[in-house]
Structure formats: C-alpha cells, structure tokens
Image 1 (cartoon, rainbow, N blue to C red):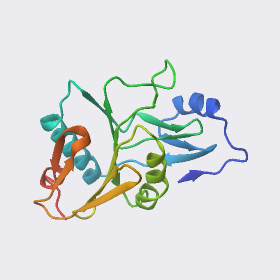
Image 2 (image 1 turned 30 degrees about the horizontal axis):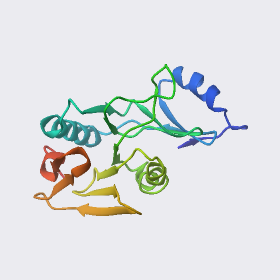
Image 3 (image 1 turned 180 degrees about the vertical axis):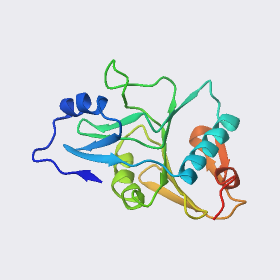
Image 4 (image 1 turned 90 degrees about the vertical axis):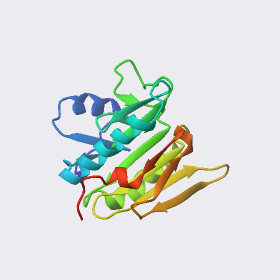
Length: 187
C-alpha cells in the first residue's frame, strides 16, 4: 500500500525517516510503499527455504539475508525481498550497511497484498540489477513456484507445480526440492 504524501520524499530523508518506523517501507522514486506483516504460511515457507539452503548451499561462498535487508535497485529505488543471497562479500551503499547492492539471488513469497506487485514491478526491478542472476517467486496459497534466470540475452522462466519437482539453482550450485519449500504447509 502506497502512502499518500503531498510531496515526494528525498532518498536521504527516507533513510532517516525509515530508521524511526516500526514498519518497513520500500522507496520507489520518492513514493513510500508499506510492507505488510507476514502470514503463518508465508513465514513457514521462508523458513523452509532457508533450511533448504543451509542444507545445500556452500555457506563459505554464499551468505543469506532475510527480509529485513533492504536492496538498492537504483539510487531512487529500494526494496525488501523476502530473502537475498550474496556470493562473496556483501557490498553496501554506505557504511551504515542498510542497503545491499549485490545480491545474486532474491526470493519473493507472494501474499494477497503483494502478488501483483511481486510479479510485475518488483520483478522488473530485480531484472534491472546486474548482480541478480535469479529470482524465485513462490506462491503461499497453492503449490507453485517460478524461477527466473538471467540468460545471455534475456531472462528465462521455469514453472514448478508438482511436489516431486526440484528447482535447479545452478547459479548457487544447489537445488531446492519443492517438497522442502512446502513442508508443513496445508492447502
């Protein structure tokens, strides 16, 4: 949900303002977008995915950051993916370390309030960030995931909808079984 303001907020003003807020807000070209709380299913799916990565990801080469880590898409666009993965050392906008600039992978778990934005605007933002090699969008209301991977000239999309499906994450040198993603989730 966008906050209606009379004037667009400057980015430095946003950084100072955001530190004082209990809620998280994304910043898109001066507009503030409130991030709603997560449902139980949403949280469980994220934890299942994190557990899957801890089991299969080489943590000496990759680092995970949860939804509290803001990602800089451009100097005027800052978003909060549900999960970011960094290859090597993280690069931040400044010494505050609030704005990550080099995720190689991002995850969005859809919610009723975010599904349209996750699949359109945010996906486009992620596609524009050169460091991102893959985006995974997971549906919390039905068994289904979409993996977008950066190709030589365009992005490729793969859909997964069967419990036995395995999401190949070559860029992370691991894979993620869909069964792991939805463990403990009833539809």
